[in-house]
Image (cartoon, rainbow, N blue to C red; front, side, top):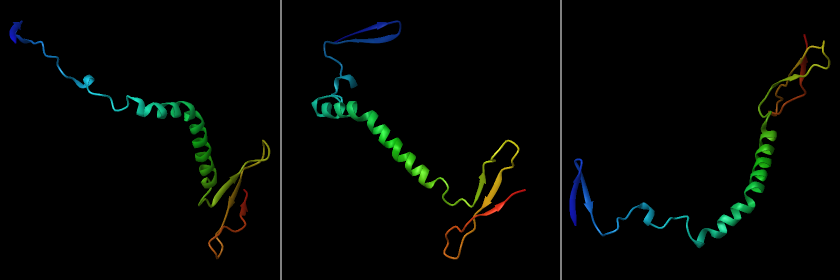
Length: 102
């Protein structure tokens, strides 16, 4: 092994190959992940669609959960919006709403 200097740097000359991170086998490389890659390639978009439908269903089911005041859309351009207040009955459920209109 010979040592030389280039502008204040130490240069090491050697015939031994340096080992770096690119020399180690990649975890995701090889035949063990071939089927996983093909499954991901074939089912990624359908999986996203199913996930979206499930999330949308959960959101639609729980959208008004716990709400006690609602606003009814005006029926015409000159009509006022209607505020609907739901009250709890003795069993804890919501009773028929009371309409308030100004």
